[in-house]
Amino acid sequence: EAQVTQNPRYLITVTGKKLTVTCSQNMNHEYMSWYRQDPGLGLRQIYYSMNVEVTDKGDVPEGYKVSRKEKRNFPLILESPSPNQTSLYFCASSPFRDGTEAFFGQGTRLTVV
Amino acid sequence: GDSVTQMEGPVTLSEEAFLTINCTYTATGYPSLFWYVQYPGEGLQLLLKATKADDKGSNKGFEATYRKETTSFHLEKGSVQVSDSAVYFCALLGDYKLSFGAGTTVTVRA
Image 1 (cartoon, rainbow over the protein chains, first blue to last red):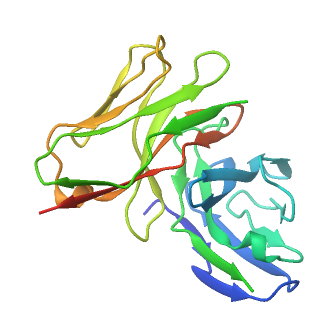
Image 2 (spheres, one colour):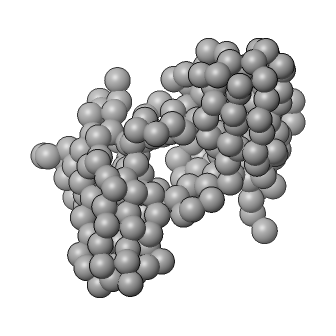
């Protein structure tokens, strides 16, 4: 089954404790992306990657890092999480280089206290 | 920059009622437009799309027409079901990213 898998689904952490949210896709897509979803703001892009070792900033990259060492994986790293990063995070992949028709993961609900 | 504005929710309807969710956009040129749906506890799924002016996207009884003159892409369904209860997002494709509206929560009551 074609899917985008994120882990964990839920995470509560403390300010400053480094964490990684993993994302994996089994569709051999070159394009992958991370979004955060906040009430009243919709989804905002954090980072995207058009291929292995190619990443670029989205609209809200501050406080986040990503890496793309393999085509299937695109982890999101919060080096020093803060409460304003409490949000619902989605990973997405697309068969198209411009990111259209994206497939989304089920989301990771992160709470930073 | 690119932006999408969609009607505020929440919207509550009875089964078999007519649903309209307004969406307007601001962008350079003529971007591809999309509606995504998010069912409770799940990620977003592509519902329909339109890639040029006057195109009509349709899926699962939902329709939306790309109106260049009014920069709009309103979502409609003639007869909703309880299973249509979800959050609906309008989006446009800019440079290597989708720009989303804030989302409209729709609840359909039996």
